[in-house]
Amino acid sequence: MTDVVIEKKGHVAIVKIEHMKAMNALSTDMYAQLEEAFDELAKDLDNVYAVVLTGSSTVNKKGKTVNSFVAGADISEMATKTCAEGKLFGNESNRVCWKIENFKRPVIAAINGFCLGGGCELAMSCDIRLASENASFGQPEVGLGITPGCGGTQRLARFVGAGKAKEMLYTARANYTAQDALNMGLVNYVYPLENLLDEAVKLAEEIAAQAPIAVSLVKEAVNVGMQTDLNSALKFEGNCFAQCFATEDQKYGMAYFLDKNRDKPAKEFKNK
Ligand code: CO8
Image (cartoon, rainbow, N blue to C red; front, side):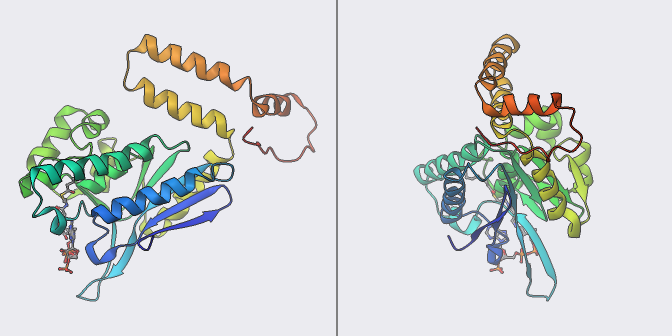
């Protein structure tokens, strides 16, 4: 991997997309690098309890520093694709986003700038989205003669409702602000750019301090529940709840609460 960098801070992994020649646009190779990064992290679940996904910055031709999460799929690569190649690209990108959505640990998108097209789709495959004040959002695909191909028509409508999603999708506007995204529920919080990564890591650390197996099961239960009827979802939740009682962390977490010793060491789960 040359354009996707992993950094670890305690139990938090930070995955940074660094392909600023094209504002972090996602080519086939970039999707492959992202997939490789998450595959690598999947082998280290004993240490990685939460992930932050973010973009990078660069100085543009006019000497201005520009930040980008991901400015979309790579238009220069897509421009000459046939239907069959388009289908393949869609399958590949969906596989990567699905992998992130179903990654065993929560993934927080720290959206530091352009979050357009495939970038917005990537952010929506994360569990939680935080944005910097300068971030801009949009699904500009129809302005390029295509539809979104990696969840833009599906996850967006589920997050913000069909009406708002259709407005974004039909108009191809690429300048929805961070405040717009906050108002429509697309992001949870907006921070000044210089604080964004710290805030994302802080949130990831807060999550990483909880029982990791329980957190993973919560993620699975919410994801499964969002796609099924309430009765089936509640049964699924019941099974997750039951599974926790087979873990050491449940015994430990409850014993820790019941132990009234004020001088006990700080709580630390074992992921067992
Ligand atoms: N693809 C390829 N290159 C890009 C992209 C992109 N999405 N975005 C920016 N770049 C390149 C520019 O071409 C430029 O290259 P060069 O320096 O060689 O001229 C460089 O990045 C810097 O860009 P700009 O000079 O344009 O920088 P500005 O600050 O003026 O503008 C913008 C930044 C607003 C981000 C502008 O570049 C832009 O509008 N980019 C395109 C945004 C867009 O339309 N994104 C949606 C793409 S379609 C999509 O994502 C479909 C998803 C399908 C899912 C996956 C497959 C199924």
